[in-house]
Image (cartoon, rainbow, N blue to C red; front, side, top):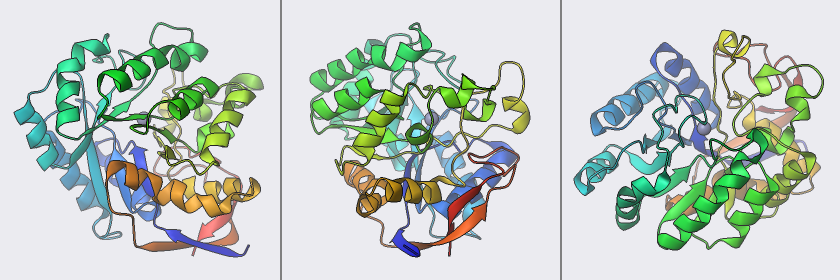
Length: 336
Ligand SMILES: [Zn+2]
């Protein structure tokens, strides 16, 4: 294959951060994706309609010159119970999903809720108002490689208690999570990142310490990566792209207590083309990056297109002050 034209991809899980860095990260994202769902774990977290309005304006301001078609959907952080009126106001400012982070599991989650059942009053309203619930599915006190597996009991319970609520288990990383999502009703879906399709724990600590591969949930055993790849390449509409592109500055990654997150937005789509091509599943790429996610969220499918050509692309050592996935190496596809 010499080139491929696909709908402009959707990213249903991205971190655009805040302040000056937001301008750079948003601009980069807008050149790769037509639409993104931005995560709310800024400092302070996004929890009010006023914050969402400002955040959305900042992103659109940063991208309007280079990508005027770029659309932003927002999440808000579930760190308290919300009233129906509050949820309605959040919706008016572009929120289509609520994001749940358990206490302390990832970047800026020290204000997370310890017991998800404490949020059931709000979760019931999310169901009523047709929001999506996005879950960072890790059980904080479990052993690091078991955290996702240990969280699955909450997922099953939520799916049972709220049968009309659409739930996304974000960035699945284990065979057990893939299996659970497969077996739960159609209201439960999962996002899959580029890095969890590629990495195992070996790529973080197997040889030398690779801080730029360190992320939550941790990439795990080869069997887990194989299970994530199997569902990604299956054509099952429950599984779609959410990159969880989560940039931190080089300094914040290369230090004691380095931050978790892989900066994949600059390279996500070219890498996915190669991965789907190598798996012999290129015909399924379009739905994975620009079909199933939109369908699940009830958004119209993207009509704009983007073409990638088979031409080596050298990935810089840093992009926007952060070290991207595959930094300093060559990848096979470039945008036309
Ligand atoms: Zn994330």
